[in-house]
Length: 466
Ligand code: 4AD
Image (cartoon, rainbow, N blue to C red; front, top):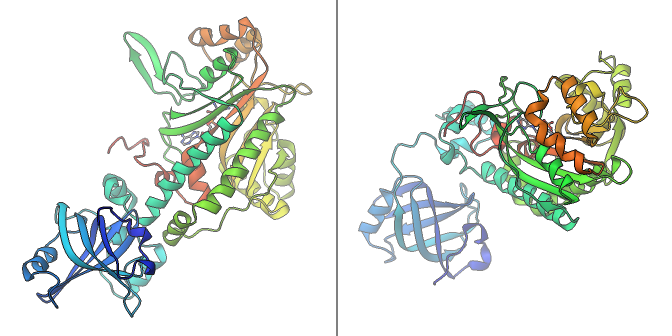
């Protein structure tokens, strides 16, 4: 055997064949001096390996060596696949490997801060185990994040980050297919791109500067640079003060900007096609990953329509009013109102994914285009999954003097964004776009309760390491 076989691919069809696998020794159990069991894990899949000196498979010394391995050490195992007569508990694959050779490639320290099996249990399993009098330590979020390299080894976490990879891949492939150009904009910029206080300020060789709160200004400038349709996948920095389940200080932004021919609905059309395709793909092609997530964090599959529902902000307000929720018709929706509207939309239209558009102008960033028929509203939208925002988008103001006026009215120092505003003085097409938070999409698609679960090394107001 020259090739390594993946643990996840081992099944009954391998019966009687020799394999070479590499993985981590998840559990090691010695039975007397002549036999030991090692559960080997690779990419979330596990297989039981049997080391026995009877009949003459391996030496007694070998059994002793295997029994002394520490958990999470990396091992190469060479052996014969067999199908046991009784079902295997504690391993995902229903075959065993009768070990002929086993090498330890990297030894883990013997006292691990997290027990992976404990970290992989669902709340229900933990409750049951505790009731049965089992000794187990509930692994809290801070411990998980402090020892993230161990925590991400659980099947659910492996699933989450593989799904995340698919989301950004589908985003990229879909947009390339639709004629968008991938761009990379600077993250060190002179002025705030979104306004407000959530800006990380820094000293740029003696000049005041900040970390980009979004690629907003430069993606629009790229449209002035004749690319027609652009997108970017990159880091976004927000100096958030509040510690919430859905805000990070650094997240991955999936950004889109495009020329508009007639109406900002063209931008919503892209959102619709992109996300329906994405959800279909994830459901079809990430079944194992979704199951792994659901086993630890049970959730219902997302309900969405083949053509995404579009609701006007005013209609949303009316639905909330009809349900006796107090809302300001020209203000922003708070988290509670967004959730409530999500419920009402689900009841009425049967979807947990929808677009809410024509927001009041006063609650949108300075670069947002007002509605042509009412200056109180804007050509803008938010998109929701399970009652929480994952996208905001809009048509932008492409008339430079009006843009400067809007920036000033929103309290932005126009001098810090003068190169941006000037970009529109050389001829600028009508355009619009949207920004998606990658971690939020994955969190909400998988029905998870905290964005830290979908950020590999989260940055929040209290955490900058590991
Ligand atoms: O709503 P935001 O701030 O909009 C923009 O950045 C605009 N430039 C987008 C545009 O093209 N008009 O952010 C866009 C998305 C949000 O919908 C949310 O999913 C995510 O980014 N997001 C955050 N994710 C994690 N932590 C935070 N602090 C986030 N702030 C926004």
